[in-house]
Image (cartoon, rainbow over all chains, first blue to last red; front, top):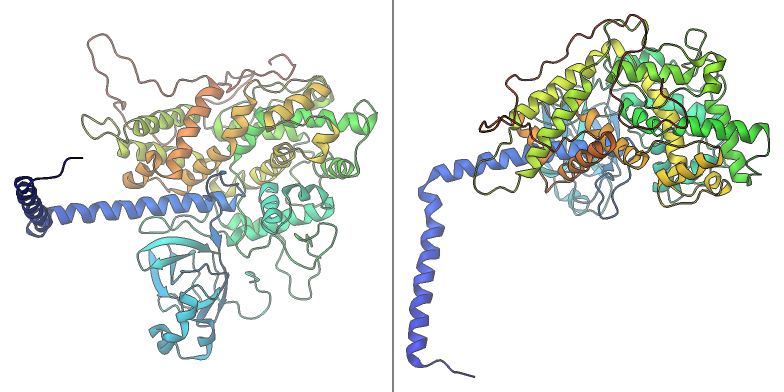
Length: 191
Length: 429
């Protein structure tokens, strides 16, 4: 087996330095060219829209009872039960890592961090601010949680609920459509 | 609907076949509960505004036709279907899950019925109850037979949501053809069997529909598939021109959405769609695996189409030649049309998801293109051919119009594009 001579080593070292410089220049270039960032940002927004479309499609398939392909779980999107009560919405069956709930109705959107179910008795401000108490739930230890909507009054219906890992995604589960808070009597959502 | 119930059984650790062990009175009651629970189906969280409700043309149609809300204690008992054990009645309203279930699009019923499955099973049921030409059944087979006859081959229970048979529309098979004609401008590829026609089943299902026929559906749907194929073909392009036009695809989706929603104004066809999809999903579920009745009829096979073919043979019939494609196509096409109706692809960026071959949606669209082409014989993968030396644009000059006004149906049968060449042993009308 041939061994490199001292001349070869020097040449290799020079090439390595040149390569390092080239990588450094390449890494610094985007900072000087905001246009590239802008383009990248656009692409991210498009990806997010496409991800939502794909997620919505999978939800449709799940709701119509479709069976996933042998190699995937595309039509087994997790469905979370939800019960609406004055001032809060309680969830049951949350998947691990579902930290945020997005409530929507038409154009109105509110993204809320899911807090631990035990905090139900605390004030809305304190609960929404979050605390270490829900750390266990965030780590996927429990499947219950709740949110306290501010944008949606008790009398307003909520068209859709989706559950996210972070504020901007990805989407990992969905919940039911919720009517206004029932004023006693039969509870349609039966959760 | 029964596919959803089967999935609930499977998710609970049981088998999909357990649906056939549930008592028909429970199934009938469950259908009413499923209808009422549709109000819990969420909107689609796509884009800047959620899309969705109403998914049946008018959200109010659910409340307009369901039973009044019961205050405790309930006057009517729940269906009580227990996913743990179908022989046990549980005091629970169905469907379980707190979210509501969505039924397939009418296109699903059309495609499944195009295989001839309803007529084949109609003959199977008839022979099983009038004689012994098909032999004897197992206990599970008897339960299937009882439920099938009670649910679909007799007058439905009074005031049931599935009760779309009356003196005004006495023949279910004719009423289904009427719905297909209105929604898609398509006829089933087989004739009404002579036995049923002799009993007054041969009515003109195109009469008195007025202008409410989506005669342009097939042309627009095929064009959409053609454009999606173009996108899929070029999705991996890194150089050269790319004839894909997401904006045009979005326009096509919008045109289809407008066209289909025109037939749903005020909740039209919502109840009919529910009832017809329910019937066809029962037969589809029967054929998805070697269920007890399939085993009793000695029709074990590896696909629904093969099972249907063997069963049809037992009763001297033949299913559609392209049954395999029709079975495979039914669910994906239904989901895509539902999404289109809800406006999921109205925006060019959203429409581009249809030909993203790295996503399950794009993969499914590729399957739909192949299956549709094979089922109908229509070459949607081919590009428009121009005269020698002329290059044609992949998109037509004009964007698609939402809906064309169909010519009024006067008398006599109108020519309709038939997706398959099956006759089910009958001559074409």
